[in-house]
Figure 1 (cartoon, one colour):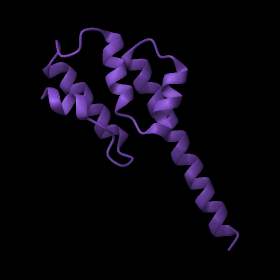
Figure 2: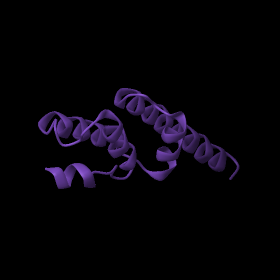
Figure 3: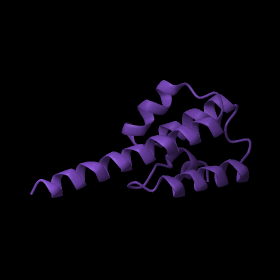
Figure 4: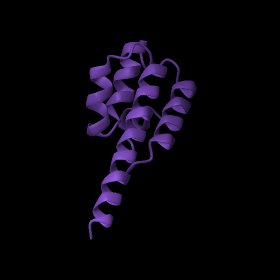
Length: 92
């Protein structure tokens, strides 16, 4: 389980599954990470680079805050991609 925890990453754009599994592993193995700072580092390290940098720059103080920020950024990225696709298809 420790290998899964430290190797866990977002698969494609499935952030919800990543968050759920990360939280499950933290509950199943509460002593795997020595403190909340290391826990946030492990969570942020599994995010896609486009989200990871923004979450890190936001300097979250808790895992919950890091999760909320990553969800907002992911939603924003999806919205921007949808707008771009819509704009490209309407200009054809």
